[in-house]
Amino acid sequence: MGKRYTELSDKHMQFIREQKLFFVGTATADSRVNISPKGMDSFKVLGPARVAWLNVTGSGNETAAHVRIAPRMTIMFCAFVGSPLILRLYGNARVVHPGDADWLDLFGKFRPLPGARQIFDVEIDLVQTSCGMAVPFFDYAGEREQLSDWAEKQGEDGIRRYWHDKNQLSIDGLPTYIVEKSG
Image (cartoon, rainbow, N blue to C red; front, top):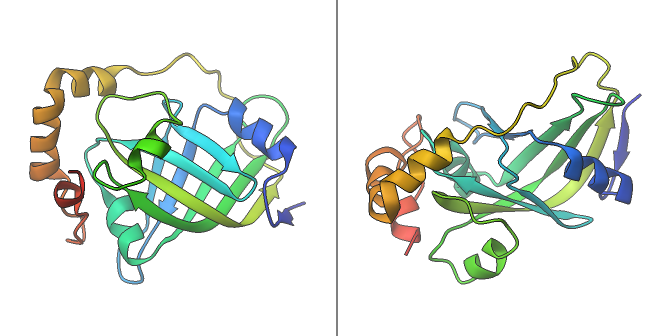
């Protein structure tokens, strides 16, 4: 049932545009495996073998710590409505911070989100589909606004303090460089 591709097809890209949720998996050789759910219209297809997603401030910063050491990343989408499908993107990611030279170019591809802290730019080396027949149906009821509301309330200085206090190390003690790289 599963199929492999070297890049995204138009059909895959359309499927991605229709999804409200995706999952990101990363790990180093010695760290815990991190799997994060993402939403907020933060994912963009940049080409058949390149995607990016805008990361907003959250309770942890595992992905940034992992990618710095081991750039491999898996991104998974699954259909909760319509025909069943699971779409996985395997590749190598790099983290782009607000202080990096290409931040403005990449950031301009997204709807600005309060608390934006990084962009993950991913070169895809394998696209895999599988049936998804065991994924249940769920109805989309809307976006949660709490994270955006919180980030707006913090303001830029409050977000930077939060990065300093809560986002500099992974749960395994790996540095994220969020403060140094954010300009």
